Image (cartoon, rainbow, N blue to C red; front, side):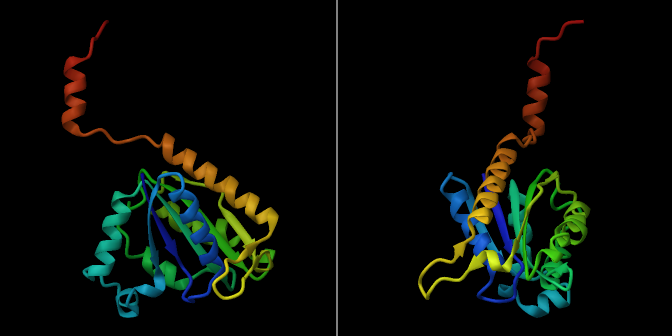
Length: 197
C-alpha cells in the first residue's frame, strides 16, 4: 500500500505538520509506504505559474497516480485552507483522486474554523474525484503544544484519540478499496469462468 501525505503549511513549524507526521509514523508502523510532500518544498514559481512540466510537479503527480490514498493536512487561514495547498492541488489532473481514499486534517486558531474542512477542502477533493473522503479531523491550536527543542509536540488526549480513530478508519478503507483488474487478467477470468444459464 502506498499513501501520499501532503502538508499545506508554508511554515517549518506547523501544528498541521505535527498531525501529518504522527499520521505518517502510525501508517508506517502498520507496513504502509508513505511519501510526504510539503507545499513549501515546491518552487513558488512552479505553483504560481502552474508549471505542469516542472520535474517536481510531475514527480508529485506520478506518486499521487500510484497511491492508494492521501492524507492532506492544512492550517486554516481566514475560514479556508492554505492557498499554497490549493495551488498544488490545482496542478493535479482532473480525475487524480479516482479510486483513492483521502483523510483530510486541519488545524486552526479556534473551533469557529472547524467547518472549513467540509465547506472548503472537501469540495476540492471531491472535484478531483476522490473515491472516499473520510470525515477527517479538525484540531484547535490549543490542543497541540510544541515540546522543547528535540522533543515531540504534545497532543491533547481527546485529539490523540480522534486522530487514532481516524487513522484506523483510513487504514480500513485502504484495505477494502477495490483494486482495478488488468485487462489481460479480466479477459482470462471471463474465458475460464464456468457459466450457467
